[in-house]
Each structure stands twice: as C-alpha cells, then as structure tokens.
Amino acid sequence: MADRPAALIIGANRGIGLGVVKELMGRGWDVIATARRPDAANELAALARAKPGQLAIQPLDMADTGSIDAFADRLKGRTLDLALVNAGVAGPAHRSADRVTPEEVGALMFVNAIAPVRLARRLIEVLRPGRGVLGFTSSVMGSVALNSGGHELYRASKAALNSLTRGLQGEIRGRKVTLLTLHPGWVRTDMGGPGAAVSVEDSARGLADVMERAAGQGGHRFVDYRGDSIAW
Image (cartoon, rainbow, N blue to C red):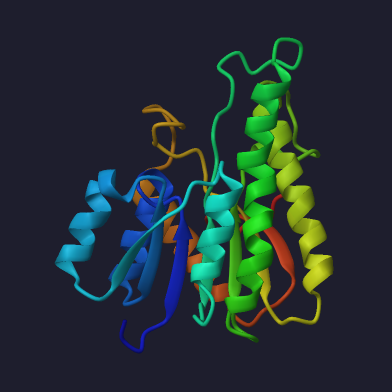
C-alpha cells in the first residue's frame, strides 16, 4: 500500500462497515477490511479491483476466538491510524430475557461485547502513538441513562460493550490513543430495516468525519455519527 493514512474496518462486507470502507477510500485512505467469508464479499472485491493497492480484504470471524487471535497476529508490524470494530448481531428473534437460552445469550454477548474488546486489546499495539483512533460501533440502545425498554437483550449486549470500552480506556491511559464508542444512527441496513431514518452513506460520512477529527484528542467519548455526545 502507498504512503497514505491506514484504516482497519472490522465487519466490512455489507451495511455500515462497507459504507465506511467506501467513504475512507474516497478520502484517500488505505483500508484493511475484514469479512467472515471474503470469497462472498462481492462488493469489497469489486472495490479492490477498482482501486488496486488501496484495499486489502482479510478473513475474520468475530464469533471464533481462534480467528480473532490469528487475525491479530497477522497485523504485527503494521501501523494503523484508525481502527473501527464494527461487529454486531441482533440476537435471538424473541429478544426476551425470560425466553432466551444460555447458549443464545452467550453468543450474543460474545460477538457484541466480548470479542470487540478481545480484539481491541491487540489493536492498541498497532495504532499510531499520539494520533491513533480506536472506534467501536455501539448504539444509543446501549445507554443505561436513556433506556426506554424493549429489545432488552440487544440493549444489554451494547451496554456491556460500552462498559468494557470504558474499562479499556483505564487500561490504556497514557498510550495516547483516542477511544470512541459510536452510535451510527438508526441506519437502513439488514438489521435496521428499510424504515430506518438514516442512509448508510450519511452514517458512514458522519462516522468518518467524527473519527478523523478525533485524531490526537485522546480520552474516550460516547458520541453519535454527527459528533453529539450521548449519555452513558
């Protein structure tokens, strides 16, 4: 890859992740994009063909600890300016604490909360000191202060992610890396549905703006795609 700023986007084969890849590439960034099945990530492959040398596609399954650790090992020796951990599943269709099985809630919590932080601890090592930005795709639904009920298991998983990212900030204090816990908006994706208020393009543009502006700021903030603060 050329001498351009470098970003890593986790979960980039569709939706918000793919939107952020497109946005950053349009701004001149080199991008490493992950997909659970790169052979089926047709839009990413088309982008890589259209802009040779600017996009690398890597396999990563955020439900598999071996895949997470192997991916982190492959990053050794690289320097990233930005990493967005964009991992999330809706969870059990019934979304009710009194009906969920231990296996269902375990899978939901692992992918939405545990795996992102497991990977993030390794990403800290390759982020550029002083200006590196580490973002997590969360949701306003993870806010305890703003919890209005409904979708309780998904809310709980995102609240757990928020708590873990807050704790991670305490671990890395002094490393000069900025942490962002991000609400992308209610976006028209497979998860958000066709009636959602925000387009993928608008969300991706806003997230890219927020992350670019955060370089060198340090600290940890919970903000939406417009940069507005959200109550924890």
